[in-house]
Amino acid sequence: MKKVLIIGAGAQGNVICGVLAGADDIEAIMLADIDPRRAAEIARYVGSEKIKTGRVNAADKADVLKCIQADRCDMVVNATLMTFNRPIMEAALAAGIHYLDMASNEFFTRKDGRQFLVEQLEYADDFEKAGLTANILAGGDAGLVNIMAREAADELDEVDSIAIKDYGVVECDTPVAMWSFQTYLEDCAEEAVYWEDGQYHTAPVFSGAEEYYFPAPLNRTGTVYYHSHEEPVTIPGFLGKPVRKVDFKMGDPDSATWRFLIQGLKLMDETPQDINGCRISPKDVFCRQLPQTLTPEKCIDLLEQNRLKSQAVLAVDVKGRKNGQNRHYKMWTDSPDVARACALIPGANDVSWITSVPASVLSLMILRGELKRTGVFPCEVLGKEERAIFFKRIKEWEIIIRRQLFSDIN
Image 1 (tube, rainbow, N blue to C red):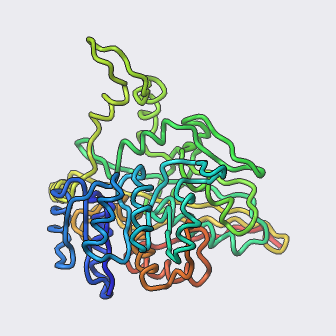
Image 2: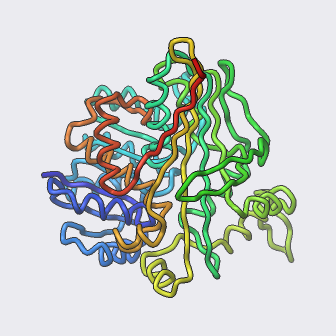
């Protein structure tokens, strides 16, 4: 029987609590957050006696370590903001337990004269020496899409390109956020990294516009743009074979509005401005007005009033050759919409579902010894047997991976 610490009582923590609480081999879950009221709300709606709640300052390694040791946890799942990756990883190392997260805060970091793709990899030697597992970037994107890409790449002799797309449609009569709105807009405002011909490149914000068809459950064409994300950073180094190009694009029906606000009005500018004798940046004002991520109570309330609809799809296109023949694998997610997700785990939404079910499954695989590797690694390293277990388990939570194969006529 295992004990797990989940740090972060947001949309992701809600789903992870629900999935782990349903596992027979999980004895206890500590859900901790800087705001214990949010944690208590999630515990109340998930409704499992396995869940205890508490307060933790994720920025304070000593506080995280104290929380781990108090409950004698076997693993910590980082479901809070990626700015806290370092203190949480360091606390996991100090306690001698496994670790999982879903995002990076910094690309191309440097330590001791060495360059690392993302900041979590700075701890690779330490986790390896300790015989511990740190599965990083283990959500939907990054995470699930990386595993999908590896699944197709392993069937090819040569990989030309891996193109990842994320698109979601939200309909509501009041502003709502399915996950951290500020994080999304910060990524929109940064130049995007992509990989091509053996080098990393950057693309201007809102460049690379592409009309892309997302099959059912969306069944619509949407515009996606280059977007700052981890997949093009890690996949070239961890795929297991060369790839000529890797990129990530994202969009939603309101992308033109975000582009106007960010590029036109420069509302994500961090330069302080003098306003009536006060120094404040446009970003500070803008982000202060953004809606907070939906709480379980608010999500349930909107659904009961039939005021909220939401559906997200992640897609991966992998092109290359097998036995000299061109092949194109198109894969996408068929997963619950917000209403179905909330019915399965109260308070869940479609975005937290596609992000946190994969994280939950991978956490359980680590605890059960089904991920047979130590050190720090992203999801594209998973082998065939590990992927088979993963795909089977996410399907049990109604995430189905659809696939089409296009090839030359012989």
